Image 1: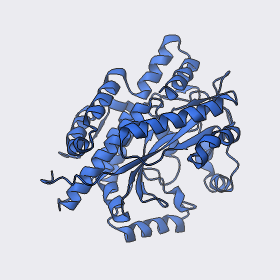
Image 2: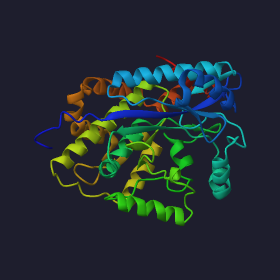
Image 3: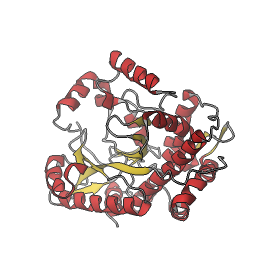
Image 4: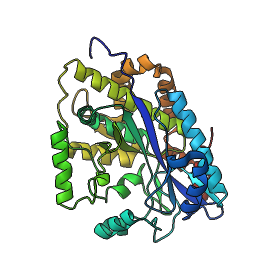
Length: 374
């Protein structure tokens, strides 16, 4: 741990959340995004966007430096979009995959999406459900800092993936997993741990190679779990399922900021990077927590080897604690973490909703209520 902590360095946090639009009668996803988008933009302008399927919509927060202001922003945006959805007889639902959906999935009318579907037909054909993530932007950082953060965060991301797991039901079935979104999205090229790149030249070389090999059509298709933004001075972390409970979203964002602040502090203090973790071990860890959530095992960034997710949550809090203390996030983070551990992850809460009457309608209704709760 660096002897001197850079109190002046407070990273901003911005969040992108992808949501489902579900019919108020059938609770199946419904392709009303164009109508909802038009109405929601009266209050949110360009902060609300379409997504790959016409049954989805995305909300972008402003950048924030406090957890309270981020939470307020997200709650307000969710309520605005939920009201717009209501006018189209739809509900705003935050789940990593859809419990009830149709087939074929209705793609948004967009030249880029059409080109993607033609270039990667297997990914489209094998996708049985919309999938929705929560992406956290950490800034302001330079490109070299973004790459250093990506490298430093790699072994911690499975822990956060487990904490955010919120998609046990997928296309009218029980997936048997905490996060079926993980299995849906990995059919697309480049989805997975970011390669450990040292500098911008290596990053540009890697992206150009992906373009030459036609593994991606454009730079927006770099779907690594952590990637430097192409249009913002941020690192974008893409590991989490979207969560109905906004406090889980804020928790993930604050933990990522705490980790990132400490990684940059160690870099500034000249500390050597921890031993790199192989892609194979990281993929195994991501796969395990997608199946088992908090009951899974993952890599240990502190001591090496593997250990339960529960142990890594403690290590994560210990590592990030100095940064959390500086910005006053420690108490709120500990409280939010304790709540998840006692009440369950989003996946576990979906399963509890299902158990009462063994009804996927109850699952969707529970998600809709939590999505717009203040």
